[in-house]
Image 1 (cartoon, rainbow over the protein chains, first blue to last red):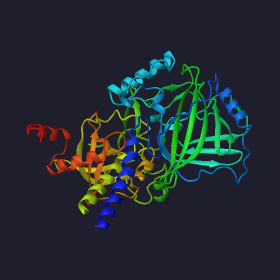
Image 2: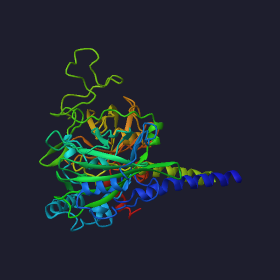
Image 3: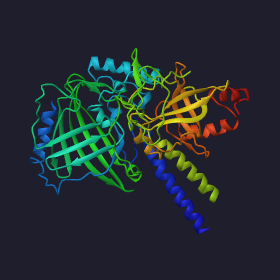
Image 4: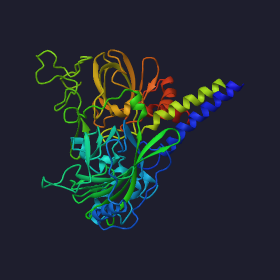
Length: 335
Length: 163
């Protein structure tokens, strides 16, 4: 009887452990949410006109920042995956994917452009065009939202924030000023930062126009952000990196907007022996755009890329990209 | 008690299968997500590559010929979180898959669930079709009745008064 009761308690506990995260996953805009308590946005202490003002204020509050050594700098080792966000709350009225675009958050041209995306999402169930289909880099701010495997390497003078998708690598130059020697903007921009104890505060500028996701607003070449990163631990052995972000974009936003994004330690990936590999796209993606709509190429069709086929030198031994199974796909169109 | 425990474990497994949210680098507008079909064939290729995995099956036609069908699934990182790896499928073995077909009629689709030779169902789906626990459970009943599309199953249910 006692054994049966224990079994029941174990089952119920397990059910709760799974069901509770699942309920939280249904939060709008949440990729992999539900690990730890609900995310809450911490808005800036006051309204800042620019990201520069915001960053300088935080640096002053931190009295110039904490100078970490290689032994004291916070470590965020291991593999991480997205763990929820409040992203959609910035732009969509509840309830999430069936809600409406909130008026007055985006500037008129950006709001009109976003409403067309949202119309497709609601009426067609999909936004037809995604700039990533032709292997464009996700860039920033999309980096914050994209799932897949993240790694964080903190050194006293620099932090590396890596997503295997792309791959997308952000470099945070600690204690430095912004610099742009290329004379243009880039996908991940220029990020500087400082440590405030165990919290990492960053400023990102000089970004190319992009978007958050295909079902989110576009961003302009004046998009900037201030982020505060902090590792938090919760019951259930949950480690969660929480990122409070305020976005500035004089072309896209009427006033700055704030959200919180999270990443959790991906212990299941570590247990599975996952090794992060180079992200393939140009040589393996068979999705393409035709008349603004996404489609896929199948084996044998013109333009099909076989990521497990041979190199350009198939007559040489050892040129298969499928060395374990040595499979071959047909070169003629399927009947 | 064992039955209750089994039920809870089954529910937990089902919930875990649906916990991972599918996201991808492209729109899924090319797939007809309102249509679910079942195909059975032998494995020609399991491309466990970024940004998307693809399962290729040789499926026999009514006239005895074979057609290579292509089914798009989620990324390796996402699938690893569901216990699916680059060696989950064995070449030459027979698999049954649920898919949402390409709207243009070519032999392919977004993959839903896959039934392994031992009868186990797994979920390699991305956003192109559902491989969720709910979909698997619904289809277990429909497969037992011999249905191979949701339209066929729903029509039969309607004819029987919703049973």
